Image 1: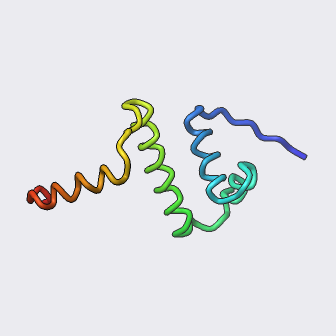
Image 2 (image 1 turned 45 degrees about the horizontal axis):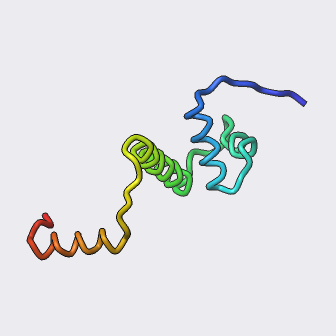
Length: 89
């Protein structure tokens, strides 16, 4: 059996692991499924890539700015007030 080793950043490793986990696969299986000669990305895989990018951005923003302490009810109340006040676009 052969072994491959590549150097990637911690961020790249975290993203790949997250994408594999979201598909319910091991990192090895996830990467092997994407080897050269495989078919192009499916709609599901493209959506998964978008989801990981969205979640990554949100996690980075939360790590930088902290997490909101507002409840969902607080957010909805504020949104309703803004709609009533005509602030909604």
